Image 1 (cartoon, rainbow, N blue to C red):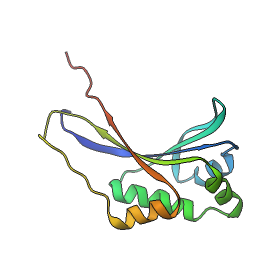
Image 2 (cartoon, rainbow, N blue to C red):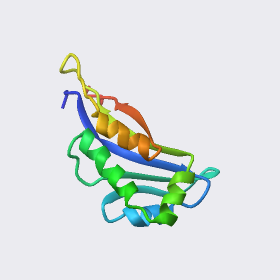
Image 3 (spheres, rainbow, N blue to C red):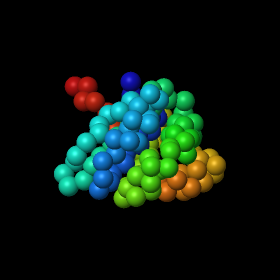
Image 4 (cartoon, rainbow, N blue to C red):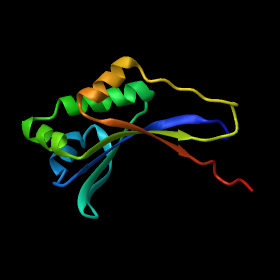
Length: 127
């Protein structure tokens, strides 16, 4: 496929403490890509099971965070990095590609103390 397109949203959390309580809370609703030590800190990385679009995918993760119990939310709040990483596949068509985030999504991200990153994956070499 040579078209630029949205892939999904990953959520990556980095902390000085074990993130397993959050992973356990999320695990039925998402794919856990990683949970464990990562150098001198802990990393948990998730992706949604079904992509419904960038705004819906971020809202889904925000709702999961909002449903954390008090202990899990404390771990979330004390983590030093909480990033929604929006993934795109690059391509040669169309000549440009646009995507926008709804203000309600931006507010939800701010309200849970998270950030947004964008990753663009290169096209595969087809020669």
